[in-house]
Image (tube, rainbow, N blue to C red; front, side, top):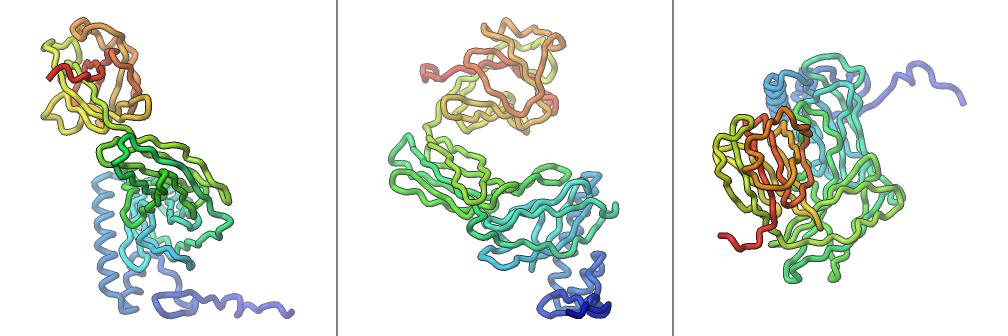
Length: 367
């Protein structure tokens, strides 16, 4: 076979909008190039929306004091998926164009779509600029033999409560200045059918490095969640999920904006149910902790950060009101298990709040 000459090797074709153009028109290298090409293709409104989204990302960058605004174009290579089902930190504008604010050019931007290959957009080697154009990013559907599945069973404490199960593919290890993104997008939700006996099976799962979150809910019962990773051609067993009725904890506590000793040693009381939050100070913007009720155990979650906790022992709260925090070995954490009857000292530094508290099961004897 006669080898291709230089002319043929340079004859590359790529798609732009609805037409096909020769490689003489280079891929856009700046946001101005992108906007100009969109307007030339008769897509002025899309160009304007893209610019507005870029400006919003630039404003967030200024607010955060760091980051890089990235502009790209996602393309689905067939399959039943839709771009609005994409779960990622990126903001979709229209026709696959997206914008995001990345914190670090050493880490990729993950794109996740159920049933499609997991894509991590590499950023290493990109120039250190305020706005960077990534170009086209393709996502391809996976064949059936490369997809995974999951099965399990849901049991509700109240047989009359109708259980619901749904799942969504996680957006991955996000690369944003805040480190957060809302992964539970309505368009990305996967409704899971429950059989009469509570069993379920979910197929078509994108394998590692992607992972999924499964949620189990029923009216009046404590919701639960599970994190799941799938392997190609295999079915993972989630096991038996029990949805329980919420229990109640009585909270006895002292609170102060300054470190101990506590000046006001009048013990206050409150009640918190599973799935609810507790505020030691009603005027506090954040909550002191949230009570996560889990099967046979419970955990406290501290959303106000930074938070430090130390376990002091059993006894009366009043006996610990003059404790010296400098002599205690605090642990910085976001959540923790607890033992009923034990006394804990919590330092919510970000909220200027110190709380000495004790948790016990609420028997309903007190009003």
